[in-house]
Image (tube, rainbow, N blue to C red; front, side):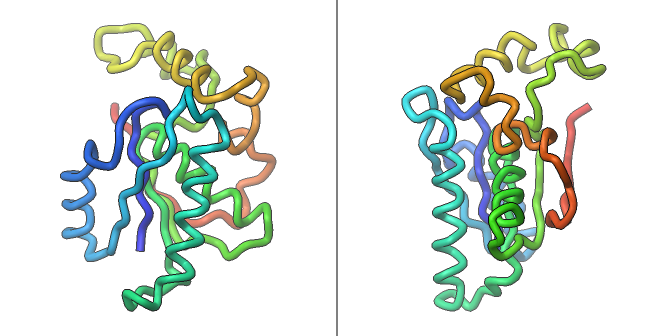
Length: 175
């Protein structure tokens, strides 16, 4: 079973925007997928969306037998900011001593707020970019209440102190 979160910079969208993608993924992988909505910023700042994901994961784990699902093979996935939530949701059980997730699918994940990487320098303000550097900064700043929260590993998962004991992942990055 995979819990999948939509993108939209933590500010826009809902599960209907990724319905076709999630259906294809479910049909091709033969994996049950629950595509979820989460509370959106700026009305609901960090950690609201991540708390929603955590609640869904706990609910799925507690109710897995009802649908003949293996609660020990629970996965997370998402695209863009949804992939950020999936990565952060993978860190939480490891950090808090909970049951670890089995897998993470991260589709063009937003994993850090460093806007000066080689990728940003090459594509961040050009014609090939769907979002400019300024756009991404705008989304990040609407997600958090204070700029220093951007450094938290549950906001910028690449800033985690360790990547040990995390679920296997597949990251898909558009080039």
